[in-house]
Image (cartoon, rainbow, N blue to C red; front, top):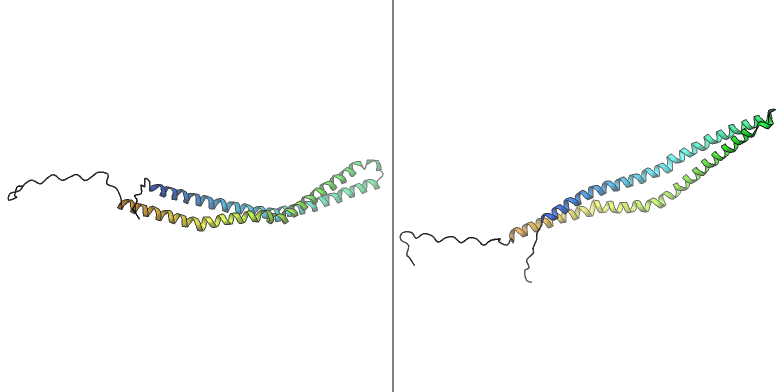
Length: 180
């Protein structure tokens, strides 16, 4: 096999790339951690916060509906039977509000059931990226460091002389030297 010369112009470019890759790795790891945290917070919000909120709203609105219905009954039993329109409107409004809260709770329960079906495949992709960042990238960084070192050693051994060494001037004849 014939020896070939390699013309390496910027070995330091490997070091610069390696430095950029280190910064990318740190940034990407933070982004993956933030994304996984956001998914976890969203799951908590759907499963607990929103569920509790709408269950509380249903109880509150049910109480309001009961109060409106009692007020309507009192108005009907009183002598002011023609004045029950406002109470009937209050009952209708309270019923609608209760239905809205029940619909919201149903939606939250549906989101809760479907959350993992939608989110888990995406989280698995993030876990794959995290694995690459934690295991594969350090190997790549080590490879780049070794490659840079090997190129440094190679270039030191095989540096083509830029100028031929200057010839030394002939020595002055000393006494006892024989002239040619």
